[in-house]
Amino acid sequence: MIVRAYKKTDLDAMIQIWNEVVDEGIAFPQEELLNDKTGAEFFASQTYTAVAEDENSHAVHGLYILHPNNVGRCGHICNASYAVSSKSRGRHIGEMLVLDCLHQAKRFGFTVLQFNAVVESNIHARHLYERLGFVPLGIIPKGFRIKDGHYENICPYYHEL
Image (cartoon, rainbow, N blue to C red; front, side, top):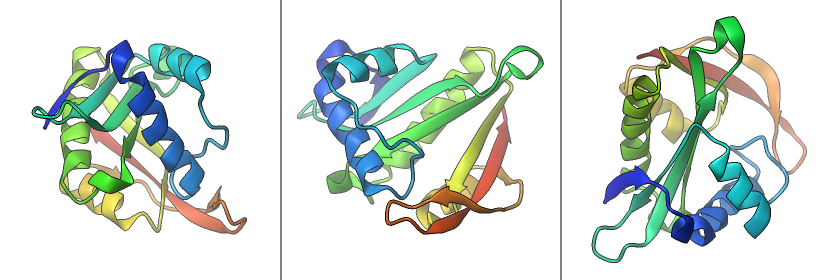
């Protein structure tokens, strides 16, 4: 598995993986699914977008987006989102994506990577982030509306680069 910058030929797989996570309704705040046009625009608008690709089959198993978390005096803080196909979870692809993201964020001049809304019940992501040195900032009660309509706490994190 390698992590590399995305190419236009990856878009179909990327849109499918992204939409799967959005449709699950338990991790991403987005509710609208991407289509060919909106997906191409969305991924191109990021500071950096990468995919996890199987070196043998060239199949895309996951992706991340990296972009500023804010502007001006807070423009040195970036944000990222990670998506791994449900068929590929448990293979440490998320870890590879996060590690590459930390490297790319620094390369683009960011000094902090901040996650605004990690859902408290997303234990696998939270354990990964903490193992990689992310610092939890507390809990925002009922900060995330799950797809079924109930609210869960969110846990912001940051990592200095």
